[in-house]
Amino acid sequence: MIKVFSKEYRVKHNDTDFSGLLSIASLGNFVLDTAGLHAIEIKTSMEILNKQNLTWVITGMHFNIIEMPKINSEIKITTKITETSRLACKRDFFVEHNQKIIAQVSTEWLIINCETRRPVFLTDILPHINNLITPENQIDKYHHLRFQINEKALKNYYSVAYSDIDINKHLYSMRYIELAMNTININYFSNHKISTIDINFMSEILYGENIEILTENFDNIYHIEMQNSEHKPMFRAEIVWK
Amino acid sequence: MIKVFSKEYRVKHNDTDFSGLLSIASLGNFVLDTAGLHAIEIKTSMEILNKQNLTWVITGMHFNIIEMPKINSEIKITTKITETSRLACKRDFFVEHNQKIIAQVSTEWLIINCETRRPVFLTDILPHINNLITPENQIDKYHHLRFQINEKALKNYYSVAYSDIDINKHLYSMRYIELAMNTININYFSNHKISTIDINFMSEILYGENIEILTENFDNIYHIEMQNSEHKPMFRAEIVWK
Image (cartoon, rainbow over all chains, first blue to last red; front, top):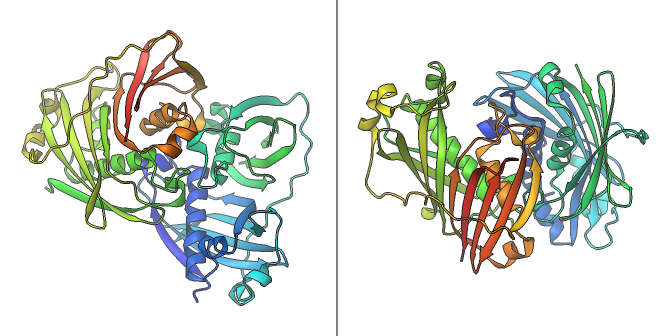
């Protein structure tokens, strides 16, 4: 079984933001695609889990951005499992353009029971997973974000629509970060580049849910939290700009 | 010069909607990507026009959907210029999966001056374009939609955000149709499949603009119109369901 898996992508027009460079959300979609293809290869795929009424859920991501590529660039994403615990699996990604590392991403995953929505022990389900670990040269794990957003923070409201949801009728993983970034003034994007992003996926958000997005910043750091209508935190992100 | 150009794509997880089938917006993005690559090949690309302070704008699209492919399907898109007039260029697309046509799309384009925003004569700018036409086996042109939306139509409001815009800080072409489709109840998608879509791009919509989206339906036909804050129509779509 291939422990280290690579896949190439071309940056299309719609993968970029107004800067003409690859957007965070599209980079995230490429990364998740690579993970899915590698999982099929090593027999840890969604399809295999779904047959047992189980599924992978992503709990967090860390992005380290060195330089984003332009429209029509070819990028290569290399992924491997770098760590497991009783419940969690860490998967890292190295993004290259012209043989140079331009971004690094790490992700953490749990297997949950589709009915109870509770995590199960990883090796109970995938006994071979510990033979698939390549621990060398790891990327930092995402930070657990425990910030308290100030009551005076900027507030935005959004209702989850048809184009935001995936096959499970939940908000797409990368749509969380797009909606979070939409609350930042566009002039800030024009004058700053992203250095790192830490993401905590705390709860799934369903079709039609009304969410409140709270945003505050201190110098070059943005804290963004999504809450449901009962003010329960569903998602947190910390964006650090260069 | 290659008059008929083909490109293959794999349908990624994020290219599908909640049905697990390729979404209209992602199909549109693939189609526009194929057009861009062919234009580079035949020296009619955006880059060449931009150097003369000109740009391509899309004025309309017609989609004929036979069957949408699933996640991880490979599709092949073949494109050619099928017609030109003094101002407009028609480009058609044939989408195949397993050697079977699963969708057909036609598009119409103008070249405009970036400052005056007025169209210019096609052959003044690209004298070789009439040698690139392959008129056989054309796909229907989009309908000019002249419907009047009833005052009692469903009204939705949207403010154009960071993740909606392209390098020109305008709403992405395919984001118009996503926002239009977001106004349709999700149960309708569960129970019906799209047969055809006609799209009229009437005016560009800028970052931060507040738009009103009006939606009404008669049997299996949806009419959707976007208006700016002065109630000027910016976009119209007609979706016919099977």
